[in-house]
Image (cartoon, rainbow, N blue to C red):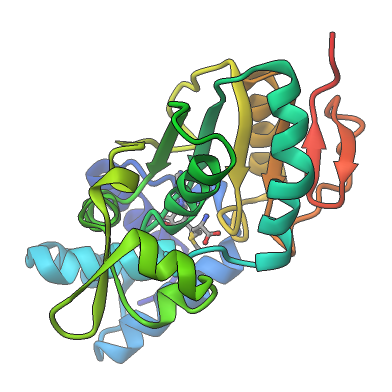
Length: 262
Ligand SMILES: C[S@@+](CC[C@H](N)C(=O)[O-])C[C@H]1O[C@@H](n2cnc3c(N)ncnc32)[C@H](O)[C@@H]1O
């Protein structure tokens, strides 16, 4: 029966196996999404459903993929990426010639590779650091492979596509090693693992949709500490931070928040 005990047992099992703590995610949305899967499998218990998917490695991987919702694409919301090029990165480069950048919740790596392309074009020959992390280890493996579908590259300018990708079998596009080698991929849970610091730029876009308000506040406070003074946090197009002042940030532009210079 899909009752509170069943949900609690499901959460315990998930946390033990994956580190994902559903108490930090919005409960109604998570119950609805997971409930859909349970019913689709013709079952009537979250915990039993979990036991079933746990038995098969591939099925479990697609369950985690569904749970973490990792759709992404290159230059997602192109006009905001444009702001990075015209306003944000030039501001950051005034203070440090080599930037330390973090794509947090990087999914398939498209966000990190988009940044690597921008940095290469803006500062040819300079080696910046771009860290890209995600909770989902399968998706990190995909990000490291760097092979993409038409849909994932649809916002890429044709000349960038031609320059930085090789067409591979089955109408897919593989990112070239010169861009691939710019990224350091790692597994990292934003709601649990310790953060590095000294970042000039942190991107955390389309990751927090199902986080509780408390989890979001804590995350944005942790990002604040992880940024250098003058560093900027870039959030998703529907994720404006309303209480940014309380958290210590100033607004650089809509969707870009700055840790004030000391
Ligand atoms: C929709 S994708 C966003 C990808 C990219 N940032 C973008 O905007 O296109 C959300 C990603 O957040 C990751 N994620 C969800 N919860 C997380 C957590 N607690 N820690 C780290 N990553 C998380 C998911 O695994 C998923 O790959």
